[in-house]
Image 1: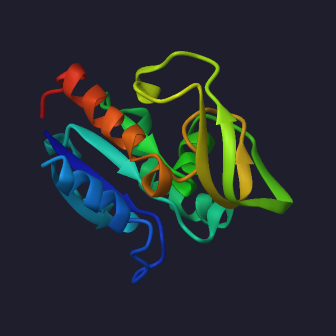
Image 2: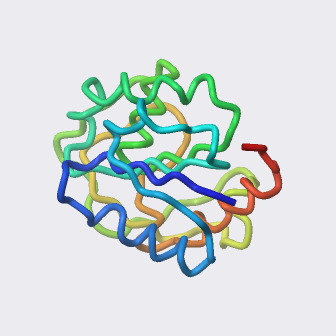
Length: 167
């Protein structure tokens, strides 16, 4: 299995990639990390799945980044969007982007309402780490599973394996 980790943060900001890289290494997953602007010059067909990271700029980057991610609508492979990656996926599928002036920071409890392989092995209520002022009206993950819920990322990897997508 080979995963492409796409950084949506500004160059030089590694904080959104390092925890994910740690999880991938711990799972012995082969992966490459690229900046979002490199997606158009990368052979995406060689990857089995994709993880799109967060960014400290949140919704402010979505319009600028969108042209680099149009391939998501055409590729038939799993994509996990986290924070800004979540916003980008939402925008690609016509979800509404919402700015909340108060924001949500720190740990929050969420309740898992529907059984899904991405939540396999987790309790019905989990604590998640949030650091945002933005939201969308489509499911992926607004919170940061890489900081408090790495099981969600390993479940994503299991989904990639189960789908057995060819490169």
